[in-house]
Length: 364
Image 1 (cartoon, one colour):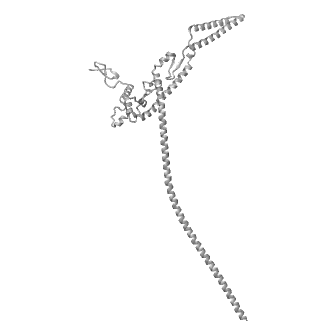
Image 2: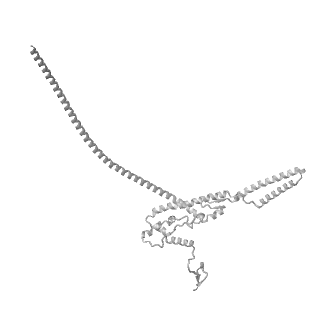
Image 3: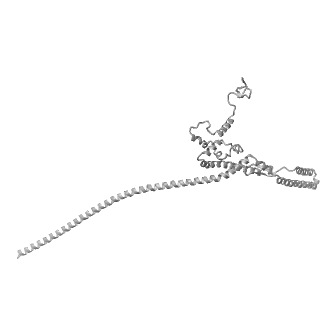
C-alpha cells in the first residue's frame, strides 16, 4: 500500500481496503486519554502497570488515597451515574473499582475499615445534601419573585374589553378638550365619565389578574431534589428524572449511615477517654511511687541527720556535764580556800592573843 498525502494532523495515512491507518501521533485527545485511563483504573485498579513484589501490599491497594472510599462501601454520590457532572457538581476523580471493593471485603480488618469509611462517605453525602438545600432555597425565592407568576396572561375577551374601555375613555377626554369654554358643564361631565371608566378598567384588570393567578397551577419546588415543576403532570415527570432518583438514594443512605457513624464516633470517644484515664492513672501511680521512693530516701537522710544531731547533743551534754563538774570542783576549791583563810585568821588571832598575854606577863 502506498502512502496517501493529506492525512490527519499533517501525517500520512496508508491506503488500505478499510479505514485509513494514521502513521505518527495518536489522534486521541488528552480528555479521551484521561477517560480511558480512568476506565482502566476502575477495571484493573491503581498501579496496574506496576509489578507488586509484596503480595500483602498488592492486597491492600484499596487503601490508596486515589481510591474512593464511599464507592468501596456502597456508592459515591459524585459518580457520573448519579450527581457527578450535574448542577455545580464535578465528577469524582477518584477510582471506582469493583476489584478494590472485593479486596476490602476479603480484608481481615474489613469491619473496622468499613466503619471508618462510612464516616468519610457520610461527609460526601451530607455535602451534596447541603448544596441541594441551598438550591431549593434559591428556587423558592425565584418563584416568590417571579413577575410572570404575579401577572399571568389574561383571556382574549377580557383583553378586548379592557382595550375598548381604554379607547372609549380616551375618546371622551379628547372630545372634552376640544369643546369651547361656553360648554364648560358638558366638558366636565365628559371628563368625569372618562375618569370613572378608567377607574372601572383598573378594577376589572386587578380582579381578572387575581382570577387568572388563582386559576393557574402553582410552581412547586421538590423538597428532595430541588427541581421546580407545575401541576401533577410536572410532578410525575420530574419523579423520573435521574437527579431525583439520585437524591432519593442519597437521603436514604444518610438515614442509614448517620446512626451507625454517631454510634461509632461515640464508642471511639469513650475509648479515647478510657485510654486517657488509664494513662493519667498510670502517670499518677508512677508519680506516687517516685514520691514514695524519694520519701524513703528523705526519711533515711532525716534519720541520719537526727542520729548525727543526737550524737552532737550527747556530746554537748557530756561537755556541759564536764563543765559543771569543773565548776563544782572550782567552787569546792574556793570554799576550801575560804576555810583555809578562816583557819589562818583564827591562828593569827590566837597568836595575837598569845602576844598580848606575853606582853602582860612582861609588864607584871
